[in-house]
Length: 83
Image (cartoon, rainbow, N blue to C red; front, side, top):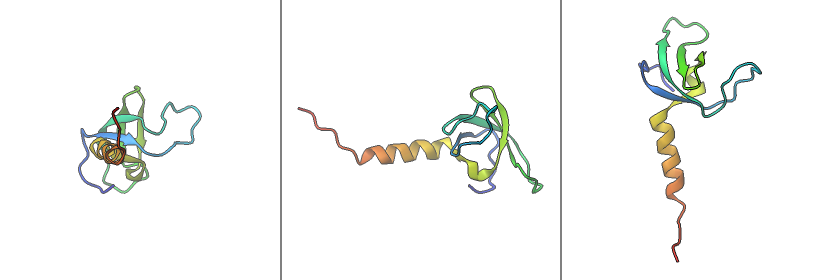
């Protein structure tokens, strides 16, 4: 994911975070509430739908629109037969 302006955008977590106390799992969704452009460790602050407020890197998330599009395209190849 690029460093585009993501403020207010819906994102989905695409990695498993290895913190036993953190209530975030792959597939969690949230809204970007802060974006840091100064080159420090964690550039995106996200308010997750489960109430957790946790920062992540660009490569740990994808835009929800992109996630939904990839699910639709994966499902488009499957055919359902009706009897």
